[in-house]
Image (cartoon, rainbow, N blue to C red; front, top):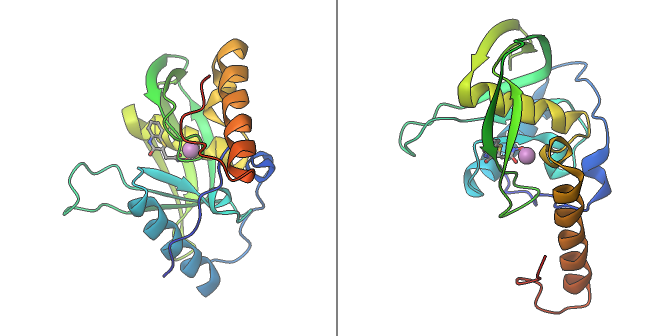
Length: 180
Ligand code: GNR
Ligand code: NI
């Protein structure tokens, strides 16, 4: 198990399309372990492998409220096979875009097909926060970020802010409080 560094905007690797997993083997299980450690450590409720720099279609999630009742979920090669016409809007955040939150409208309900850690296929229906989160994570493995679903004005502003912060960090300055 290892805590891995989470890639932040404007890291270009966040824009890569991840590759399907061919075989669920010990390497994938080790990756999933690292992803859970990193997600719980952040803390966050979901994580896609590309957020730790691994371009494989692997997602972990835990939507449980209390820390002592972990409900770890793993989705390998997740595919959205159906989405409801009804949309609903929820405030989203992303560990790769820290401390930025915005409302995003997405299909209210989706069906998701995926493999588990034994390589077995499942298809489930997700609603509410689960639906929001799985769509957010499937976006990640396709190189899409939640800010791609908000207005261009807001998106450009947040990207600019993170570019500025990255430059300041590189220059060894305090990059914590860069104004938008
Ligand atoms: O921790 C996270 N919270 C969250 C809140 C609303 C919608 C989506 C998410 S996912 C996010 C973790 C993350 O960045 N996953 O990619
Ligand atoms: Ni995210």
